[in-house]
Length: 343
Ligand code: NAD
Ligand code: 89V
View (cartoon, rainbow, N blue to C red):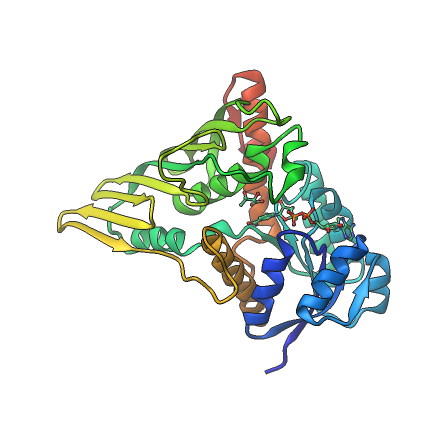
């Protein structure tokens, strides 16, 4: 079977995970890389043995020779690079956050739809092994119909050491991390009708908010809480685990720290270890995220082969991105925000 050829744009902190994962993915290979920082270009080029290196994305596309691009730059580059990709009729993966604004994200989806090329957002958290285990428990009807949920990410981890730009952004935890947690809430309990949010900044050294509490009304009637914090010091640091509580008509489910999933129903209670694998190139505590990078990239190839829509396609991600914008709006106005009118 022929491999899809890809080009990666943005050779920074997180792209190294994507490059490792591409080495493991069956059916795809990276043939060219691009970064406007020559040092990063060389580091990643040498580490992964990529000869074709570009400082400029226009030059990369002019030379061509690939079927897709994997855009791993920070958000400022996402819209221009996705639109460039659409102009060249090349399929695109775009890192989260998809865009700076919902109207940019809509324009990116339209550009790819008009060009007839697939667009997937690299929203990898729903691909984590423990999150997939929760999804499977619901699909197996282990707790009946869920009517309440909590999706929680509370940590004191120094995320700024690897990603210093996060300290400089006016918007921080919802746009960077809560976006994943909101996507998980949608993936598990379905689309959302309204959101109410409260935020605050605890760490005085950063610009944006580092704590957010959100209340979601899901379209099928369930209610959930999404709470995220980088200001929470605990005896045992949970980074980067998302903890989940679900109550259903036939039982309950708890995804606890340490990747332990407890399901309680008429048959009793059982606990399953749903730990992620430690891939050969991965390191703790990031291995959960790293494994999900491999999983989403393998899914990219599988759906390209089938000609089918990706789980986190651009149009799917508009519904997650709308929650991000609505959460900031709700926190600013102290009002619930209707999601339907935004889409
Ligand atoms: P980074 O700053 O370390 O790396 C970005 C790289 O892109 C830099 O080397 C920069 O020179 C390059 N770049 C920027 N604009 C460019 C352009 N127009 N053309 C060519 N090169 C360009 O950032 P990072 O921490 O690697 O984050 C990158 C993206 O990944 C962000 O959107 C971030 O939110 C996301 N991210 C996702 C996850 C996840 O789990 N999905 C985890 C971490 C970061
Ligand atoms: O997803 C992200 O961009 C990262 C992290 C997982 C640490 O929140 O910032």
